[in-house]
Length: 116
Image 1 (cartoon, rainbow, N blue to C red):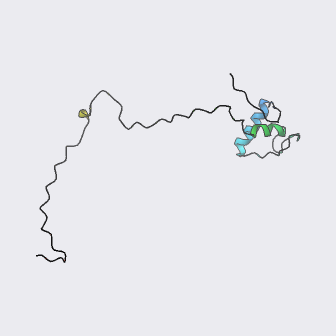
Image 2 (cartoon, rainbow, N blue to C red; image 1 turned 30 degrees about the vertical axis):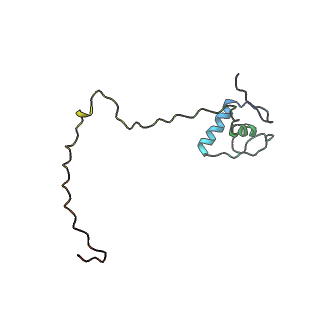
Image 3 (spheres, rainbow, N blue to C red; image 1 turned 60 degrees about the horizontal axis):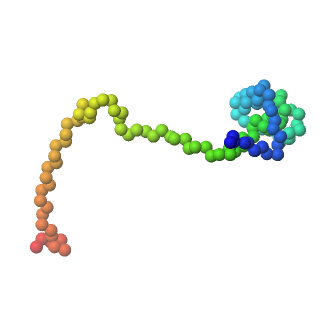
């Protein structure tokens, strides 16, 4: 079954390519467009297109009847790619020397802190 789009109470308006291009050029040039919510207004205040065309271009699209699959984000690979050699060929620093053993600790004092 093909997905069907449910239209609201507004009638579907076909917008000519020149009008859509003029509206989008104005939005990209100015950054914002303000439209009076009056579909009977013959012309927009700033552009030479009907106000209903500006309203239809700026309205949000209808929701999809099915959920979109989540976008699989590429994860960074923590391991280097296999280039055909082992880690023994990598320039590794020499191993660290073993630490010296700690000297034996002195015998503990009594509770007051004096030696017995």
